[in-house]
Image (tube, rainbow, N blue to C red; front, top):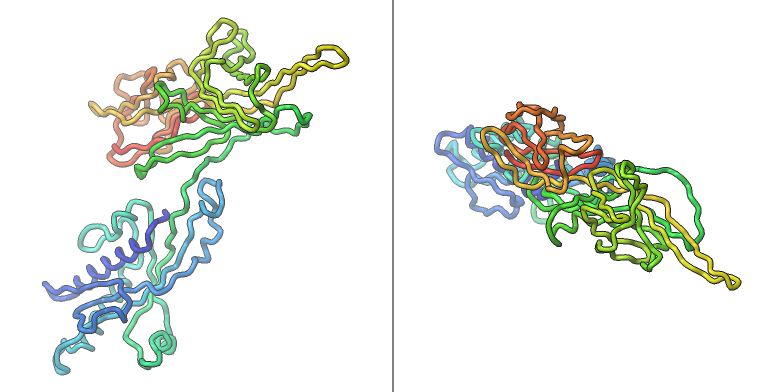
Length: 437
């Protein structure tokens, strides 16, 4: 998984280096590790290992990674890097005849350091060395995998790395590369669309044209951060409550020649369940909040719709929407009514999972907004961590099953950890949902 900070990689590798070297030294011995460049380490440093990131390049094998979930542009694609480090040892002191004479001790520490990276060439979520996991908290648990390899630098190349006008000799060094490090891309701001109709249409210039429907879906991501994605076709939820719930209920229709609104302009909605009531389609209720412009119509959808003296319930499922215009013109002294209508676009109405869940007696209960009755729906699909749950009527659902109540899901409490739940009612998804058991 991508990460946000290269510094987290360096800190993890420094921790590995310190633990590995100290494990090879006599008891109570310790070393200091630093990310400083060799020329910035103090001249009187003792028992110090410098592991300095001096260069990086884009990893060639990952240049053509697809965007996340096959949507978006290059900014939604993680950038893969190869990191280049130089390892040096800094230690001064002791007499030449002493085994702790500086050159001998530096060589010993260098050998211990290289053995550490040789013995632990891969660092992932499960890597430990005499203590807690090596990866720091900010990048652990995300599936990161760091591969270390010693670069075969020729002596002449090492000399050119160190040589300058004042220095003509190299310092004992080892050169490493770490790959592949994926930089965190920009988060998605929309999800893949669904093709509901395919065709080619022509219309007079004054005829309203609908291109698409869209909406915003807000949720809390697995990292605990609030996120909002644009969804096309629209997918709204009829959350009960006041203005704070309107973003979930807001339907946006985009097109051309849509307005402005007038006495002869209407939005018509259609749902298959209304046929049983003898209603083919119904006009958007005048009491609904509608913002109408030439290129878009914003509708705050309500749970019910008045039609010819009766009330229609907006239940979960896929709907159609079209725009119709009526106007009157006087032609050769005659009054002529002109009618024009757009093609239909689709949108979905689905459930919304309330949070947080409640846990009692080994069962987890997840609340659903009361505008949706799960027991009245034709089709309800529930999946936990990608595995479909089988509906049951048992009072205590077993693992792998789910009991549906009008406004609740009841499942056996899963193992401790982060879990993902997916809920579809009559073919329309609820918002993405994660929780920690």
